[in-house]
Image (cartoon, rainbow, N blue to C red; front, side):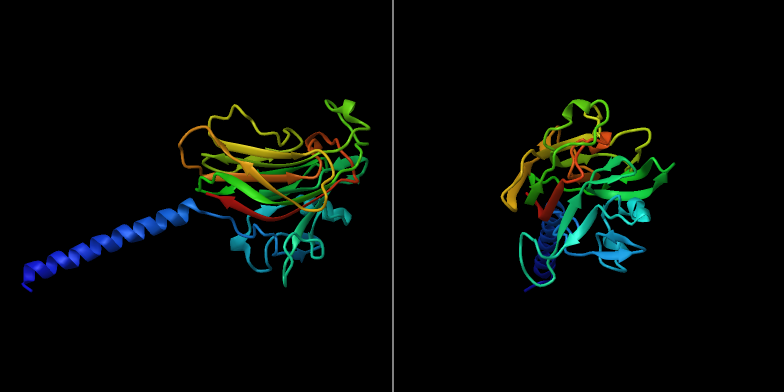
Length: 261
C-alpha cells in the first residue's frame, strides 16, 4: 500500500468518525431529558423538602413553594415513598397538596425553576424555567388526583365555590434568553399566550378523581421550527391557585415523567 492510499484511508476513517460523533451528539441533544424526572431524589434542609439529592445542586431543576411555606411549618410538596407508580428500592413520587394558610389558599405546586424569596408575606418571587434544548413530541408520566370541593375563592373565580377542584400539568418550551422572573404579588403564573418567544405548549387538566395512578401523555404543539432555550413544567393540585381559589383537600401525586421523541 503506497503513502497516498494510506492517507486516503486514514482521512476517510477520520471523516466517518467525525460524522458518527456528530450523529451521536445530535441524537443525545434531540432526546434530552431533565434530572430527577422520576422524582426519586429528595432531601430536607431547614424544614423544607427539596427535589434533588443532598449536595447535588448541579442537578437541581425542580422547585416548589416549600421554602416559603416551611417558615410556618408547612410543606405543600413532599416525597411519597409508599404510594408510587413504579415500585422498587429507592423509588419515590411527588405528593402535591393544596393548603389553607392564614385564610388564603396555597396551591400545591412543583415546577422547573427556582423559588427565590417571599415578597411582603403576600407572595413570592420566582424564576420560571430551566435550560433545555430538546424538541420532544410529548411529556408522559403517571398522575393520581384526589380533588376536594372548592371552598376558598377570590375574583375572578368566586363563582367556582362549591364545585370540584381541578389539577393541571402544563409544559411550555420557549426561546427566552433567561428564566422568566415572576413576582406573584404583581402577576399571576398564567402563561402569556401572545409571547412570541414561546415555541411549544401542552397541558393536561384533571377535573375528577382518578382510580389510583393513571398514565398520561401530553402532546406538545409547536408553533415553529426553532430550538428552545428553556422549559417550564408546572404541576399544581389547584388549577386556579394563582387566584387563591381551590380546596385545601386537593392532592395530586405525580411520578415517572419522561419526554418522548
